[in-house]
Amino acid sequence: MSRWTGALFDPRRFAPSRTSSDDTPDQSMERGCQIGSDRPSAFNPWLHRFAIFTAISTLGLIIIGGLVTSHGAGMAVPDWPNTYGYNMFAFPISKWVGGVLYEHSHRLMATFVGLLTAILSLWLWVRETRGKGRWLGVGTIVMVLGLMGVRALPVYLILAWLALTVGGFSLYQIRRNFAALRWWGALALAAVILQGVLGGLRVVWLTDQIGIFHAALAQMFFALTCLIVLFTSRWGQERRAPALRGGELESRAELELCAPAATAVTRWSAPGG
Ligand code: HEM
Image 1: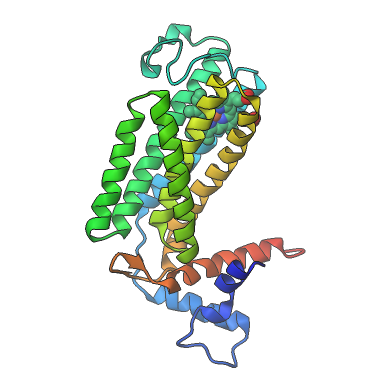
Image 2: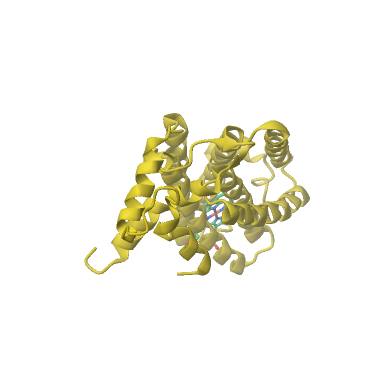
């Protein structure tokens, strides 16, 4: 276990104020979970349902992506962001035949998933951020959505670099506070933008190797949406520190959120578990 995860999952850290020094690690973990469930739940069923919908749509997108590759249809539409010169949304249905059907529906589905991810990240951001930071985040996400609508390669390249930066910064914030869902949302949005641009560059730069990164990032992005589903569930939220204080979550929150996850992973991975 790394220094970071070791510190996060150390059961003794879950209930510092109530843990007796005689407690076993299991008792300690139990106390930590009880403390979490004593607190008012921030569970929002609609947010959780929306996260589930996003994850399921992503799974559908990955399946269509697999069809693109297995049918050798990656280059069936030779241009991007346009489709045979048409705006992607105006491409006539009568031309959706052969490999074009797979590639074009993959692009459309990717746009839909991108939109869902933007809404999810916006939702998480607004929910967990107070003051100026809230509107700064909202403004940035809306601006990014507007720029995506420009549908020009240079703009997408700039957005991809921005996404790399924001993704790195989000990871840094998540490392500081594992339970800050708004940064998980920002990470997901950065990942989906990068993923979309990688898919497009694979076409316009005719580079097979980009397809490898595109395929790998797809799985990571799906895992990310599943984590958000888990964290927004009643189970995840009830084990989380209660309040937003000055827009930041308490560091205890990360521990309380991680406790059940760590237990579950350990039990699954244990022989015969
Ligand atoms: C945004 C979310 C996206 C996800 C999750 C996604 C996922 C995938 C997956 C899983 C594959 C199959 C990879 C493999 O098995 O080797 C694939 C293939 C492909 N995707 Fe995407 N994709 C996304 C967006 C896009 C976009 C916007 C484009 C734009 C053109 C695109 C173009 C392609 C192409 C051309 C392939 C075929 C690659 C090859 O066969 O070399 N994808 N995608």
